[in-house]
Amino acid sequence: MTPWSNWAGTAKASPQRVHQPRSAAEVADVVRGISAAGRRVRPWGSGHSFTAIAVAESDALDLTRWTGIESADLETHRVTVRAGTTIQQLNAELDALGLAMTNLGDIDAQTIAGAISTGTHGTGARFGGIATQITGLELVLADGSAVSCSADERPDLFNAARVGLGALGVITTVTLQCEPSFVLAAQERPEPLEQVLEGFDEFAAACDHFEFYWFPYGKNALVKRNNRQPLGTARKPLSKVRQFVDYEFTENIAFGGLCRLGRAVPKLVQPLGGFAAQVLSARDYSDLSHRVFVTHRGVRFVETEYAVPRESLHDVLAELRALVPRLENPVMFPVEVRVAAADDIWLSTANGRDSAYIAIHQFVGMPYREYFAGFEAICGQVGGRPHWGKMHDLDSHALRTRYPHFDDFLRVRKACDPAGTFTNTYLDRVLGMV
Image (tube, rainbow, N blue to C red):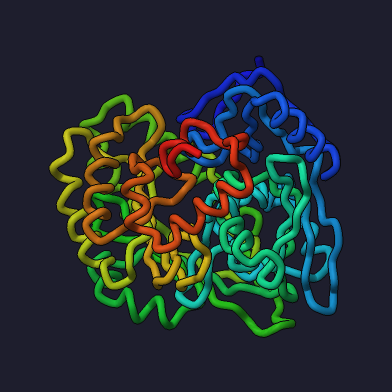
């Protein structure tokens, strides 16, 4: 037995076997043997999902020895990367090639396969999530066969597997449409929350990548505007000292200290939250895109996130703001609000509609269930879709009503994995039994 826990400590497992293949052929051999024995297997990423999606009940597939860029076409900017590669490693290798991903989230610890399988996204009204940058996938199915899919080859499998929850097979390689390296100009500053909400649609439309953080007991929001610069633009990064003070010290060391104090003395949470909102600082800089998109998160938390129709954002936030003062336990962590363009991926949270993403958090060890359940009910009123890698209580019956292609996905799943080799308790809940 090998003890395993995810990053937040919300999911644990002790699989009987952990396999560490070094090639796609070894992945196929492992899966073929597990399937023949009637066991189940789950691929492991970096454990950054807050749900039990990666929990392996008998066999785990650890892909940390199957990493790196496999091939790159510098004319088309298409890059094929092995599934166990972290986004951090991928960014570094793309940078060496003079390439970059079009859009990213703010955490780079995930593997590329784990990130796309759970629908990881960044922000930007004209941009989709990471999965929209995929042009091809290679997977090993339950019978050990290796298959490829793209928009032209096995299109139904492609529509399902780009956000596939690891329920269809083991992704071995991902082909991404990248672009030449570019610089992002970043403007981060505190602004009155009411002003941010009033101008939200205008701000999101005028900015390539727009988001804001709101501390539930503060009057200010931390607003981030990142805009793409023309190719060849010189970088003007923050100094090493400023980076340390603003990000490592203020956002991790000092904020972590406030969180621990609030956890120890809950009655201090509200004034501490107001204080945190008051001391937010402004900064302007520019750097390579991945260095702007990504932020180090050293303070651990639990999280739920819902995608709601863009037109429902203001109503959802109004109800959330009304909910927080009624909670029995206070909230120590900020709320994050982002946007994304509609896409055509079957289980993408942005399928068929322009979306706003609202993520709520709580510091580890502090009560969160009432807060999360209340937020989930609010989002449910507008057909909100939970992020597949973040905490929620919905099952397949509820999720079927929120995804037009839910049954199409299940049809492909049945064809790829008829005996449920890749399922676990979490997938049985959200997708139903195979």
